[in-house]
Image (cartoon, rainbow, N blue to C red):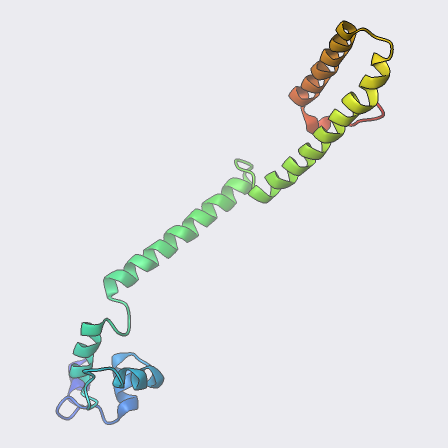
Length: 160
């Protein structure tokens, strides 16, 4: 507050409660609540109210805390911009995209396993000995392994 404004208060008193609220940076409603607190000044004395607010940590955050919060907000904005740039440059993939890809992979793997082990394997094993069935099953396992190694996204069942 400037020295000229200080002089407008007679004996440190604001003209009314609204003026006090404005001067201490509070709304009229919050000031009315504070007035009910034990030890609250009875008069609209600006200095007494500032002291009361400081003692009870009422009102605005201390400047250091506010500066800390602003710095954290700026760091978060910067982090978000960097992530957006990394996505745009293709250096990282958003979680939503990975979830979609993983869902597709899981569905294709399930289909591949069904094709190889439920559809193909039984017909190939009819009349075979246990040793031959194991060899055929191993061949199907190797086929699944090859498909997953090459890339499941490119695999299409195509009635294989």
